[in-house]
Amino acid sequence: MWHVTDLLFPAKDLITNTDEYPLDYYQTIKFMTKVNGVRDILALVATYTNDIQGVLNLMFDICKVVTHKSIKNKCVRVQRRIKKALSKVSKPKASPASELSNDLNLDNLLHEPSGDNQP
Image (cartoon, rainbow, N blue to C red; front, top):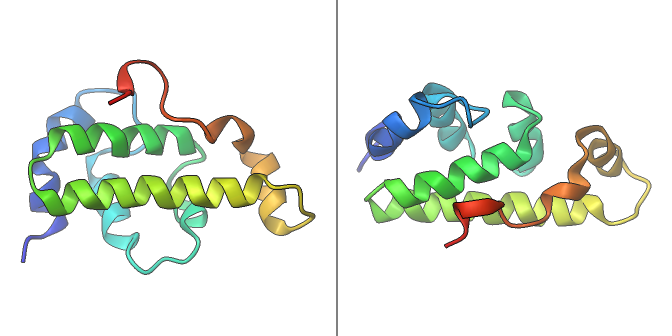
């Protein structure tokens, strides 16, 4: 079985050679390793950064660069989970999740990545 490090290696230059993404290469490996089985994906993202849109963009761009189907699928699943969690958080309820939404300004993040990131 392949390790996440091996599967993400084709994206190393993409992640390392830019300041566009909120996670560096090694943080991305740790994030992708920990994401399986995590119930609160937004809390996991928050342990690394408050730039949720940046993480979505990172997953989208990694998916375009990596070649192995399993890591491509994982990136897509992570994007879906984040978007689903954001849609639940943005619904008007008085809960700790809605407070997190206000703290992280999540209302603007429910859209697809902007610009040339469209498939």
